[in-house]
Length: 449
Image (cartoon, rainbow, N blue to C red; front, side):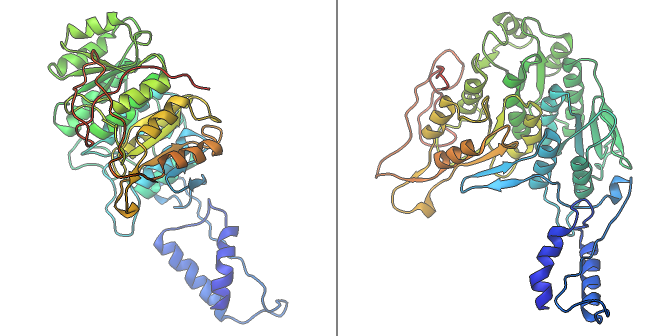
């Protein structure tokens, strides 16, 4: 038993992660095999104290029989940050799916998972509405002809079974993405981003059987300005529709007519989506409101702060979850979406530099930095999820984020900044004092170093 305690961790480290079965039955089999080896006599050519290495391998093309094991990405945590550090969006999506839908012995399988293609960021952002309640489908990423190993491993552990309706599938494949072998798949199609988003919205209506409370309209041309919509769609199940800079596609107008009366919120400043588009949208639904600016990092912050009745994150005080991704990796917005629909719910923030934290992002985090007077155990806390490896968000940036999110001792009566209503953006002006009644910030763009 001393050998078991001292050498088994080394044995596990030596095993190929692709061949290790973590499922309970396989672990039981390994344990029995190790016990048998321990109980048996040493052969004539073995010396006492030698380590025996046991390898268990399974080969299969059926995803339902795929080995259940580590996905191979580092997940690095500090006091107030957690990094999902995959080398690509598919690995990040698989990690987030298992973090938000952790498999457990005897747990029921999920109803469905969503697959989007690894070069279709528009599909990923629009599909985030399916990650929201009540469906809560994890988003996974695959290629046009095959699914990468992290995606296959995640599907094997999530075990989507399909819903109770006759047309409910286990996998919803968005656009031209490879199928998951052995699972009932419903393919959602469209010839353009706007048409595909319209098809996703129809699927959302069929599955949820309810109209949305709000609609987001984002650019189909500049991914960074559309990325924050994925987090809100996952939080609220509100649909995300696409527009060009100067013209609204007919598929988007058709979807808006289905939701006539639902408030429309446009993300991005007038150089991203022009006032001409706003006027065109208002012909379908009066009262369209713009959120954000012409800088993607600042625009994401303004969306995080925004509140208008029951729409908007209203992150103007401490005590929140936050998600950070690099604007150059738009599918990471889809990969991270379910983090905004459970656990430490929070908006997606952006950086456009891996090695330096943008000044406006640092300022925002200082504004909402948590503090305590006498007892830190009674304080509220911020937590930041980082999406991507060090090429997306550097280690020094993670350390700075950890410090900015750390709870600090403050004097009696200290509090966050008082932010006046900017006027003209449509958000409500309310008194400070909590997550449901914070005012909207003044607009303005701070320069990054």
